[in-house]
Image (cartoon, rainbow, N blue to C red; front, side, top):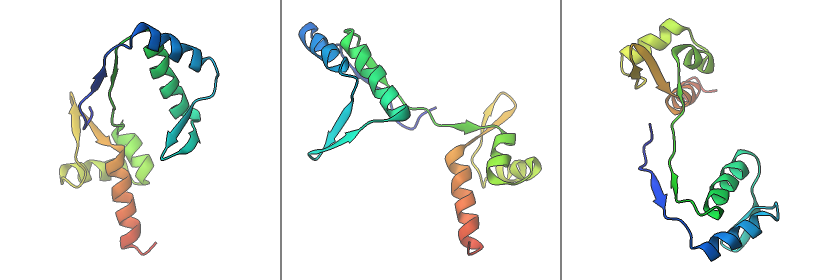
Length: 124
C-alpha cells in the first residue's frame, strides 16, 4: 500500500536509451542538486541503477512506493512493549491498523512516532 500514486514514464527514444546505457557503464552514479554532486550509495544506488538500466533497455518504467508494515510481534519488539499492549493500542485506535485477513499490520512510521512521543512525554 502506498500513499502516492504510481508514476509511469514512457520508454526513451532508441538514441537516448543507447546514450544512457553507455553512461551507466561508467559505474558511478551521481545526482546533481542545485549544482552540487551527490554520489549515490547503498540501496539508493541500487534502485536508481535498476531504474536507469531498465530505461536504457528501452523499457517504460513505473515508479511506486510501499509502506513498511509490521506484524504485532515486530511492532512490539520495535516499541519495546508486549504483544498484548500492541493489541490494546490498535483496539483503542492509538495506532492505526490494517488487517490482512485476521492478521493485524501496523505501519512502521506509526510505531516510531508513538515511541518518539512517549520519550518526549517522559522527558527522555
